[in-house]
Image 1 (cartoon, rainbow over the protein chains, first blue to last red):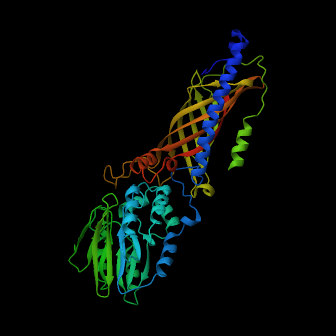
Image 2 (image 1 turned 30 degrees about the horizontal axis):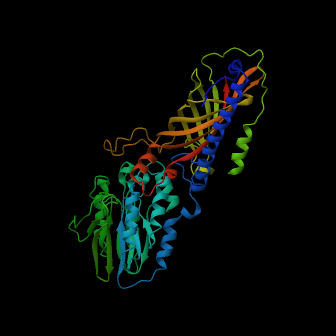
Image 3 (image 1 turned 180 degrees about the vertical axis):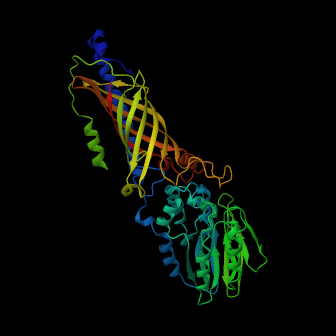
Length: 297
Length: 198
């Protein structure tokens, strides 16, 4: 191969050399263009969706990736209600996609599960791309899933993407005898400014329970964690303890199974572990009771 | 998309005047050697700016200013990027056309916005998050094709280039999840034009 030869200089070497050169160059061109074309085509065909990316923090979503919370709650509301409700609590999928795929395979083997709760830290870097990857995996579940926002999901444009892709950061829905309240507890991301968790909103939600359903509060950061606003720990735990319909509450964040009645107030706190630690919880509720089972996959 | 690619390729065949008579001497050292305009590549929807090239024309360094309109990005984002591209080989073709079949390069981009940090605020313990959200290092490979022309008695060059690139956070995601993630999940395409003042 001849690279970088000035055509003017090569004239000195006679016509034969020029002809050879041209032939060589044409061969090169052909080789490169063929390689380029096949690479380019393969690329176009495999990933047209994300072929061009404009910024790591862009928030580009297809319609099918928007308002997932509302869409999945609609799916859950159409599910049959039986005496016992069984659901899965898992979380911290952040940069553990391979493990999350294994989780989906394991979860799909479970019997009579209604839905899956994701305890937050869906993403690691708050990138839209990560939310999409996790959603792609989670949609392979046989069950609908809903999420609570984690601290990593708030980083950079994360919370804006979460709003578009999933929905409000605080929300609730009822299913059968149970009522689920999802609350943003990632106080550190808001510089512990007293706004997170939103205690007033939580109290209003707890009060709005005319059917006296069991209330299950789901958050990412548990109130005894250093990332939870110390000034709000007591108001938060007291709000739960003062509501007789709250028997237990669910969290993620610490990447370990952990449980206990940490405030001696009748409320049990359960933490699920991360996808990296390859574990999740199956929760069953029935009239007057509940059980929590740890699963490793 | 095919339409865009086609029209970009057509740009290649822009005909300049090829005669080389009475060319002006080299320009002052501090003036940029070229201007670039780039589409996509994680540094904006469109980015553009001046750059310098090494004497042997294999190493280019550019300062690009990028913008991503809300319409295409969900959020309007402004980015500045410093990027360096090494294209070691040049294949001369007829009519002053040439190909630089292989390029490799790296960039450092900075995205403006109060939601992005270069240094995490003091309410985080040291090392709580290990990456900076405002600064993204990335790398790419690519190639380009161009033509030397003479416009108004000055040597000029037009180049079209493509780059397949990724950045740190995607690379680490890929390395740790090779079963779920495929290479094309973390690599994206960018296209650009360069106007050189040789």
